[in-house]
Amino acid sequence: MAGSDRGPSVDQLAATDGSNQRELRDVLGMFATGITVVTAGQDIPRGVTVNSFTSVSLNPPLVLVCLKQGSAMHQKILDCGVFAVSMLASDQESVARHFANQTRIRGEEEFRVIDWVRGERTGAPIISGTLAWLECSLATVYDGGDHSIFLGSVVHADRRDHHEALLFFGGNFHRLESSRTERPPPPINSPIPPPTARDSAGPCERNASTGNGDHS
Ligand SMILES: Cc1cc2nc3c(=O)[nH]c(=O)nc-3n(C[C@H](O)[C@H](O)[C@H](O)COP(=O)(O)O)c2cc1C
Image 1 (cartoon, helix red, strand yellow):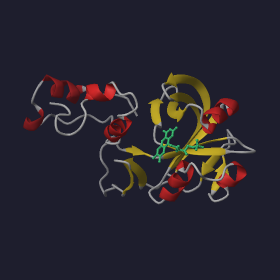
Image 2 (spheres, rainbow, N blue to C red):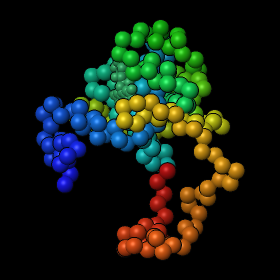
Image 3 (cartoon, rainbow, N blue to C red):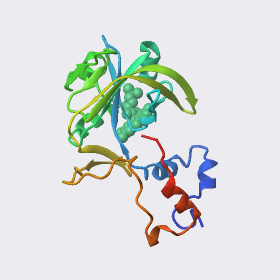
């Protein structure tokens, strides 16, 4: 039974009045994510460590990030109408910690301890040494409880040939070592091999083997 000996059940978490936020956070922390720094602004730029980044659509190219309502970055993106997302590499834990530190120096000083370049299309800072980065114009803002969901239209994107990512899992930073092998895996949209005996368990599995989803 869900939650019987491991902690509160889903029902208990859903009924949270704030006292169970710790437990909910622990459950959500079981979802491993990459880590980004979201930036905006030119004269006085701002940056925030964010793991709520998600790719949404390839055509049109859309991504989203969730930002705490009332935070300075929330207002900054509304003011600028554009933002950038830098995806951190495994050796950039200090960058993630810097932009998550609520006592960091703000204003121009916030970026003085970080290597960065100005985004070509938005003017927003792009952190140097990252795996990849995107520049976005703000498409829509949705209400998301104590956060807002910023949907961004991608206007520029690029990446480095570096494959070791910084991850967040279980409330801690982790490094994803390169999984590159001499023989790379087949592209996601290549024909799916026939099911083995182990795969032919039931209708859901059989349907899944014929699917050809286009989610990035
Ligand atoms: C791994 C990690 C992921 C985070 N993801 C988000 C996020 O998606 N959205 C958000 O609003 N804050 C997120 N935060 C918290 C902010 O980075 C942190 O509160 C930061 O200090 C906010 O900047 P501010 O103090 O200028 O408001 C995250 C923090 C960490 C360590």
